[in-house]
Image (cartoon, rainbow, N blue to C red):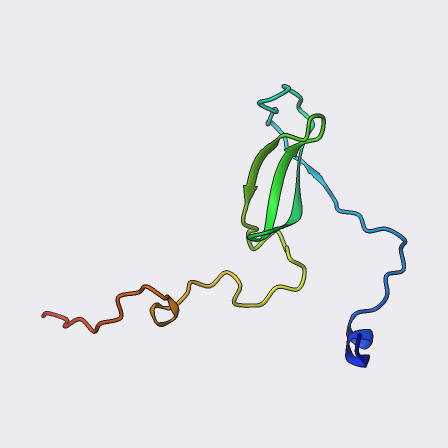
Length: 101
C-alpha cells in the first residue's frame, strides 16, 4: 500500500462491514412463500449489481444493474451509465452512410 492509498483510503473504524438490506413491500418468495424479501447491493463477477433475495431460504428473486438512485458502487465514475459510442463498440458498423435529402 502506497502513501497515497493511506491518505485516500482511511482505515476502517468499525470491526465489521454491514450492508443495509431494504425490505421490498408486496413481494413474496416463489420458493418458500415468505414475505421477508430484501434488496441490497452485491459485488458480482459481471460487475456491481443489486440483488433481491428471500431472507428465509435465500432464493434469488432478481439480480439487476444498479440504477442512478442506488448509489452502488459508492465511488463509481460519472460516465458509468452512459451509452458507449459507435466508435468504441468492437462490432459496430462504422461505415459512413450518406444522408439522403
